[in-house]
Length: 144
Image (cartoon, rainbow, N blue to C red; front, side, top):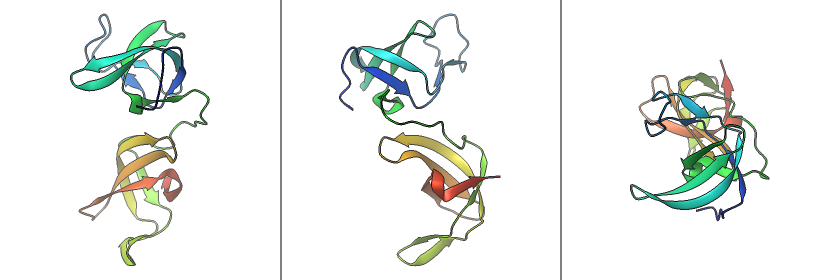
């Protein structure tokens, strides 16, 4: 837990999509956008996961969020540069222990995206012809 307490203002770093628990909305519908801010009401447990209840003023919804989906609203934030499924290119060659893994300019596709409070958005990328995928910073990629 990032140390959120009731009353803290937080910002979403990922879109919240209805998983079927919000009555009156379609499953899969985006119900709250990344970048939106809200206030912590309380925290609790749901299916062995710590969930933080957040009241989003702009939609007047109270939504259960995992702490990895939230940052303090005062923390610097920018929207992600790449979306899941988007094609990208490696800005530089990638190496591990001096061994070349991916050449500069190689084409790949974003498989997953996550947010790290210190590093910003990280992208799991599968490059063409590679068996492994790689977790990369935004600065290591460019869009197609």
